[in-house]
Length: 74
Image (cartoon, rainbow, N blue to C red; front, side, top):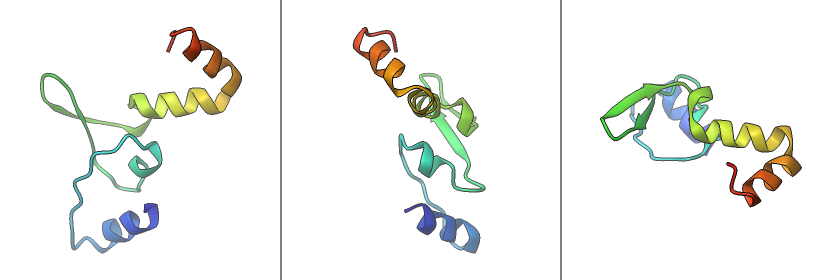
């Protein structure tokens, strides 16, 4: 999917509007990310999304992440 999206982005002959929680798909080069907030959609950066932070925290220390999640601290 990442390659398909990147190919579409590179060809500049189509636009994709997609809702996703996947930081991997959000990382397509040149993608414009909009976060839906209560007020209105707001442009954001990949590293500022909550899902990027969630994946990052998990990959840094999976055991600690799971322990905190089980204690409802995430």
